Length: 436
Image (cartoon, rainbow, N blue to C red; front, side, top):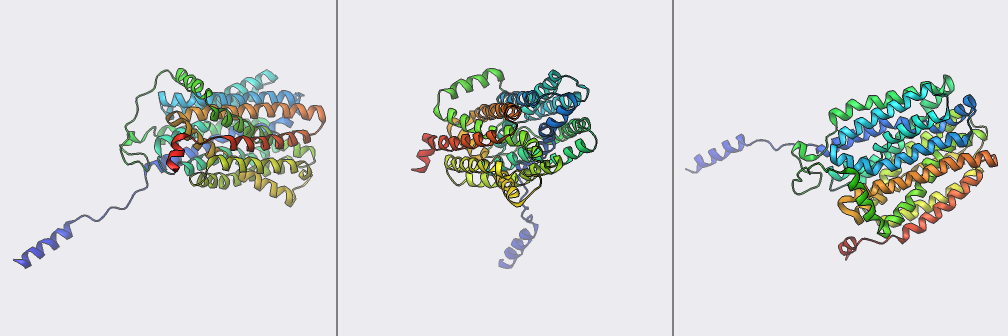
């Protein structure tokens, strides 16, 4: 009897299925598609800084006029973001992003036939600004919030790195096209890059884990897909008016405005023409910006890792303080050729470029919960308004003073103010209770 029982047990053991290998959670695939999408679509963010001199030479437009078109682009990039987050809740991520990419391609392609400054403002400012705003960091925030409950800081860092680095990695290619051929082939390249991403978005980017019958990464329970939220504009404005009554929103918006002023508005728009003023070739200056994009990946991912482990407001204070100090040294570093101190500045600025995003988004989640993506969209709007002001004022200062020195120094002082503002942000009651 015992032998029969043992034989039966052995037989059942043989029939037992082998343990399944753990599959990679689908959330990581969605994050990967999002990363590639943002990288591929980022070519359109690379062009303004290398167009200033060619447009000035061909059409005679002042740098202030060209900077005005860039400022419209940057402002709309930010102001569209919170509405895009709400539209994604209404129509889905895939539809909003695909339409945005086609609008970008249209705006960039039409610049080939422009001959007046208002057409530059219409095509590059309005159309590309609206399209890029729908592809802003609110897109990354929405994907992170829907697909992840753990590792949000890390994922935010990775997707943020894609947004910033993609803009800068294309610079050597586009600057080579401008110098070898003309600025028009570079504009066409941007349009084609945006269109090339559309099929990947439509086929591979899923809106919610529930669409695949899965839980968000790290979630203990299944999360049903919420019903489409109607009245996207009304909800966006309602969230804004609610956030306006809170102190953290003003501090986050203020610090992020300075972040935009010292990155997209200042370095991305004016570094290349400023280096060219000192005799540096256009391609060499654009390549330095590309190096910023490479090191931005490491800096932003590291910032996401730090955000999962340390207090976000203290991280912000450190990032802004170090950025301000580095800007004060920049006027002494610009030269006709690339030298080690300039390389050190570029590497350092790359590590700090958008390291501010993961802790800023973490503070939005901490204070505003389910509305955090839309609140972050409005905070991002302030980022781009700051960038737009400096993109315009930087060009005006160059026309007025003949150099960018005053712009570097003023931006360094603003970063010091942002560091102090970050320290004033208080922890949300729920976060304080979790620590106690």
